[in-house]
Image: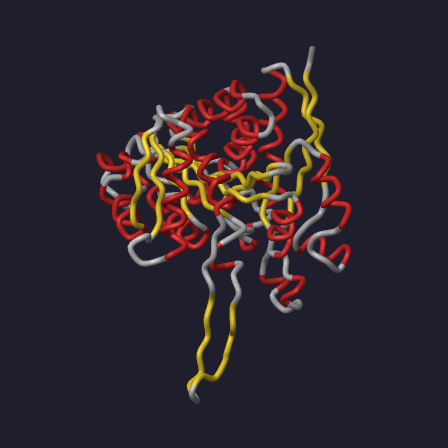
Length: 357
């Protein structure tokens, strides 16, 4: 019996429609080959929604996302909407979706195959074989704490932000990290600044408590400054990394650089509601409509969707192995082009992945 799943597709702005269209070709093929049918429904968000409805996240998009099994997002934003009010900027669509869907964890895999090691700023022997999964807490910490833009204290202007975490907020994402590690190499690195911050000391205590639920998984506590160094010096020693909002924001961007191409990197935002999947690159309006965009980040986001929201590990592996085959065969979009390789357009790259499934 064929299992059916409902996917909300939000192409978004710039190159978003091109990369999502390419990825949907792979989604349907991988689903069919693993006994699944995906019903896809397109909705607006970001700049496209502002143009059509005057707001970045229409109520019908939210309702459809809540009812779906997963959401695939292309990209939002662009200079066209730079002059709109801050309350309705395109990027508010992503923040709104995270809130409405109860998404508290951002998952970013950082994987460097032998074919991709030449693109990294690190030496190939140091980066080839890197396979890290970073979990960043999305809804707490200093980004959501109390703040003051300006106040006078003894005649001197001050500004302040508050870092705050509760035990339940830490428990749920650390537990998710341990569950992920159980299907990988069995190690969790919890990143904090417990030598300075009270919130980090609560984080570390809570991580230690959750670790007792998973005796087969190794817990390593690491200060954030050390983790920043280890990502450069010994990235292959890291398996699953879990951390708070601020540290995660910085470390995931650092980790993205070691892969050598931002166009390759997928992401997932998970929580209590429908999972949201998107490449980490932006909308790149300067190349929109020119078939120059790299669709692999979106295609690999589809693989994550199969794994985390659709319970179809076979389809996820099928896609990931196909991408590896295509890269090993020397096919590249313009952002990764080097002498001796074969250049592909957005759709041509998707066709190569499709043929390799």
